Length: 207
Image 1 (tube, rainbow, N blue to C red):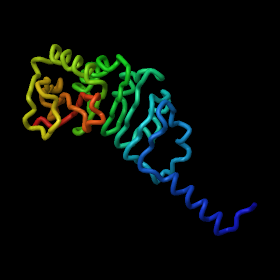
Image 2: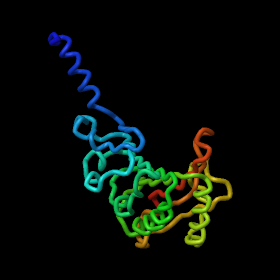
Image 3: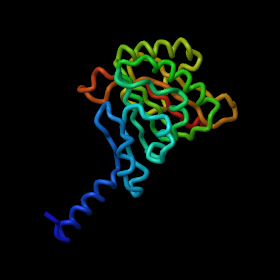
C-alpha cells in the first residue's frame, strides 16, 4: 500500500538518522565496505570504526583515514594486516586485536622502526591485543631487543601496567626530535576480558 506523505516523511527521516553515525561496528568476520555508501558525510569523522581486515584499496577511503579510533579484528577467518597498511594509517588510535594470529611480533618491531624516523604526531597510539601468554612472550622479546631503552615510565598516568613487565622509552633517530616512543604492556580493563593483555606503542613528547 502506498505511504501517505507524513508516513513517507517519517521513514525518510529515520533513514537519514541511521546514515549519520558516530561509530561503525560490523558483525565479526564481515567486511564493512558495503556500508560505506550509506554513511552520510555529516558523520565524518567517525569516533570509532571496528572491522575485520579490509580490502587494500579501502585503506585510503575517507571513512578509514579520518576515523579517530580504528579497531581491526584479526582471526583465523582473515589474513593478517600488513605492516605497510598499519604504518600508513592516519588514525589517532589504531587497535589491532589479533586472535590466533602470529604476525603481531613482526608488526610491532617493524612499526617502531618506522616510527623512529617517521613524522607521526604526538598522541598517535597503536594497541596490540592478544591472549596473555602471547603478550607475555612478546614482552620478553621486546626486552631482549630494547633492553637499553628500559624505563619505568614513572611520568605516565597508567594504573594497569602489567606488574614486573618491561617498559620502554625509545628515542627517535633524529636526536633533535622532540618526540619519543613509549612501549609497555597493560592488563585487561575488565574481568570479563581477563584473557586479553595489550601492548601499547605511543608517540609522546620528550620534553
